Image (cartoon, rainbow over all chains, first blue to last red; front, side, top):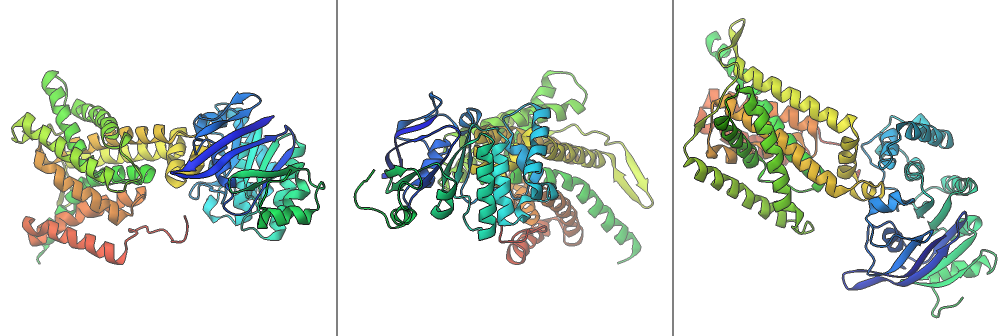
Length: 239
Length: 296
């Protein structure tokens, strides 16, 4: 189980996370919804160690992650697919995957994982020697997911995987998310596309202005209501 | 212009191109550091000359063949590179665009001062290799020492490219320069990459410093400023961040420098190089291999 408790993070004096607590069950898909500026990306960056929290704890299977460097967090089994994908534009698809496996030393294992990624994402195989910057948005998203998987994470964080992608591609990405989860990867997902997210998620949290204001399972509330809260926000905390 | 003049002109340009390998190495150093840190290290050429001086110190202590000077300069360059990172970058707020610029100007002046004080400002002669060799190609004579400098430069560049494109460290270096946040997410330590980049460019700079000394037969503290300027010009003409650009631009600047010197005299030489820089800044600010814009 992955557990965030009472995380406070700030940019200078502005507190972006004002005591966030949530739990992600192993083997499930958990989704974090919320309007723009709620602090969702900040939370993801804090879990990944890019931002250091002011206080609070982040635990994966009981082991503390808060305060560790991003590299240590990757080695503990957490990988983030960042917002806007952030592929290495002037490196080939294959090199991007190798970078994802940077902390691993088992050559044979890395090679066989690259082959597995090619099998799962045939488009990447076709473009293995192409520079990542020349890929389409959807292909870059697949590459970003594959790159994160190359570290063999126990927990895969995804920040807005559907951002800026055509509906058909979005559906494909969500198929992949469901498939990865079926193969046993725990997934914690930030998504603006609440409609798609609620279809695959087992559990969701709603975040507003740096706080978790609601949590539940899809179907517990009418989808419309969740979406309304996610985008229009609520005045009072419910849940 | 009669034939003899033409032969002289070509000869002069050829010598310049051979020496240009030094500029190429310096340009690569500026470009690599800019690539990973997005900062200009203005002390780089001074540190390179400093490393060449340090190799003279080694040579004065031990009796050794001249080739050892290059090895010693490379080693000293690596050490100085690490120190420059420690003093000029490690504890300086990187978010402030002027901070590291000023700290590296400070280091440039410091290194120059150390050299001036240690040598009383008197130029020291530097051992050249193969200076007694001249290869005749038709009417042209290729100087052995310059050819050695050029060959050594090519070897360094080849090794550097292999390091960048064939090794795990090279992969990490390119990753950091292309997408720093993503490289952190891949578990790459940017600090480690930064330090190693400074050490490796330091080694390359040390060799470039030794090559400069060997090509002109002496070292002087007056070399560091022109070399800084030439290195920066090469970086602009080659395109900031482009290694192939730096290589080609170094050779071009070396060749043109001698051509201008041949036709217009040594006093006007740098004027035309500056004009060339100006033309590039206005008409082709991205350098000779300017990438298509619109990509982040």
